[in-house]
Length: 495
Ligand code: NAD
Image 1 (spheres, rainbow, N blue to C red):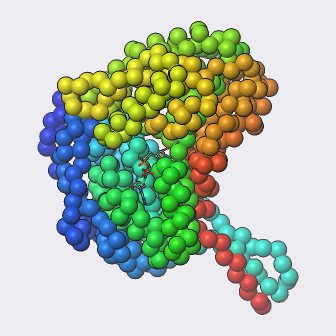
Image 2 (image 1 turned 30 degrees about the vertical axis):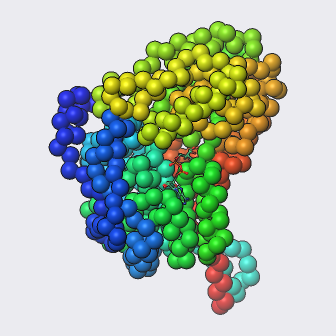
Image 3 (image 1 turned 90 degrees about the horizontal axis):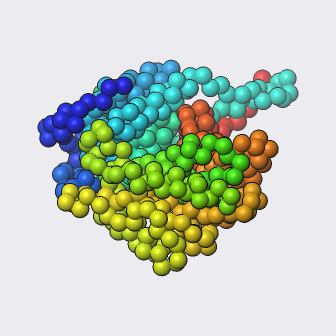
């Protein structure tokens, strides 16, 4: 795929007309209070659009619209919902450049990544769910000859999705695809740092033929709009992606309101193990670096803990450090840029605090560690590597969510597995080894929802994604995601 030139993106960004209002019942609306907040471009720290700041009143209106639309959408034949959602996916692709630009301006993700990754993968997710929905059958349970027992799946009703800022389009699509395909109506609350692509997406849904009220977008803050969705008595399900801390709030909101269903995709501190028998140290080093520096480390499954066997430690770390030092951040609108800024000044401050904590804990800084490209006023940080990390340090246990790699040295395979599992998280893990028995043993021993062997960050719509332990429960992607948005019903017919 050809990526447009730097000039094209800068020019297009200048002329972009950006919508900041909420989208409820098939049209754009200001928040009830008229309040707005300002979206900031992380590449230069400048505000560039006012966005509706929704609260409990807007949530109430959106939930009402979704509830009214539910019967019509849920009763539509799956093949008809499929057609509409496939059209929706086509429109996302047709508007790829605009959506990619919104995402890049809003969160600082390099334009090459948004055009070739985030936007097409969101379209693919929605198309995949749409394609699946008229190929899934119910069951006829075995029983007496004068009784027919059907086991069917039905949509839950009104689903609220609350999502983070690190992959705004993809994280939203992972919820929108399966929730709408199964016949639910939806309210999407994007993160306050990244509302713009979601707001644009809503109008594309209407253009594709999604009936009014079926898909609504409520921008706003977590403690107002997010909390109101969590506590709403007429929301049947919360599908959440974000931090473990906030995920736990949603369990409380559910308990305090209507025992709504909650599924949680939460944080991670993924171990990336390299064993001494790995013959492809160059390949492993590239994967380790990409695993922590991609998206400036703002990735839930980032391989933030490198666990390396002592025999190859020096040779391996040298390779990773030299990749880190060669990787310089740049303007995300430049197609040559591979590493953009962090999402905002809060996130930059948080990551710099952890770099300070790591040094005070006694870890050795061997690459990066400081803010860079200061003249731009953007939130840029050099790729950072800590050596001499022990697993009890805070930098090894807490999710930093930035381009910071912690290297831990272990004596052997057993210690590698035990250190890898010594965390509250269990989202993903990886191991590099030439020994097939160790590969299988590691894959079974690692307590994580996804395990990669001799690769990292592989995924497709055909395999589920989600975590063990405090990385959450419920799965996005694959046919298993459809289960989250449906309930089983047994129907007994006497004859
Ligand atoms: P966050 O938890 O701060 O926010 C996520 C969402 O929750 C946002 O929409 C926010 O507005 C809302 N929110 C915040 N406080 C709230 C409250 N008190 N009540 C209700 N809603 C509230 O997370 P973030 O900083 O946006 O994203 C980073 C986190 O997301 C990281 O922990 C990362 O690991 C996680 N994440 C997980 C996955 C996964 O699939 N497991 C994927 C991407 C990101």
